Image 1 (tube, helix red, strand yellow):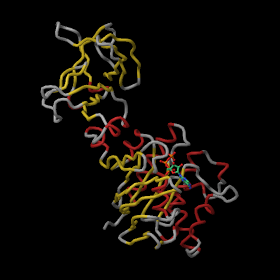
Image 2 (tube, protein in one colour; image 1 turned 180 degrees about the vertical axis):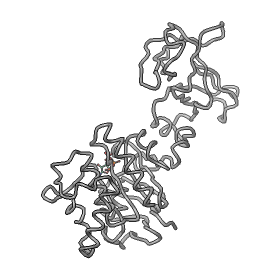
Image 3 (tube, rainbow, N blue to C red; image 1 turned 30 degrees about the vertical axis):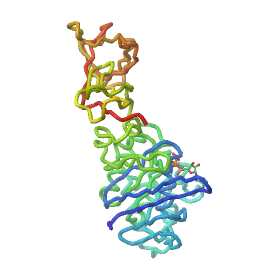
Image 4 (cartoon, rainbow, N blue to C red; image 1 turned 90 degrees about the vertical axis):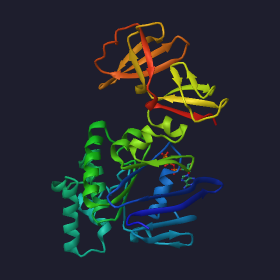
Length: 347
Ligand code: ATP
């Protein structure tokens, strides 16, 4: 049991289409967990089940140690203590900001309602906008009001579905910080759906990676990036170079170096995944170097991405510091960083 949200062994079908397969996770108060995965993997369905917008078919969902859904037994969405913010703000266009926020507070006395509206507006940094109408606000401001509306009834759980995806980069960064600050301060257990790995890394205490209705891994951003448990997770987090190979004499030979003491039996076909920062670039100094031709260097801001072709014909990408002595070289030497290298059997 947990004070926050707990989903246990949840499966879900739409007709014959099984969209969730035995999903279990929990979220503690003050914790922000991201559901991350490709389009159609079931993230929104998991969120809608937690909210009570979808009837639970299999499993159990609890909020603050109270079961709110099990098959055939169901607490209404508005009685779950759950706040929600979706991508498309969904403010009522004919109501001003205060009335939009007050909408979900009909059971409050008028004085409490007014206080809750003011408090929520202060929380999201929009104290002066009580009388504004949605069409007078920018997208970012509208989304702040949507957040205020979800916060006003002091929910124990917050569910966010791609809440920033309609916004430009600067507004998105701003609103991410406000959202994190408010939710952490209020100690709310939050589940946020996103398909953007960078956003998940930035926001989440824990990330749950999903694919085809299954949880592929549940861990901190660091664990997912540095200790992926399968090829899907390793590839989902940013770019990787793939080197298919076969284990021989307890080692794996790749075009960028040899990995010793591998955990797989000789003859196992494996995929060696190396992140672009796992390929170290230096000046060629002797005949043992693994050489690569520099095809292009792309400036990404903090770092540069080098497009390289190995003598064996492999095209690879390496990430190097912005000011880097070998940037103008035509040919460079490559070494492999085992820490940034992951080996998985071919499935
Ligand atoms: P996206 O990032 O595109 O929103 P998602 O990971 O949130 O995707 P879901 O919206 O949960 O995925 O959808 C999972 C699967 O369930 C998809 O194949 C979708 O077409 C299907 N689906 C979702 N809602 C319904 C519904 N009401 N009726 C039938 N099928 C549905």
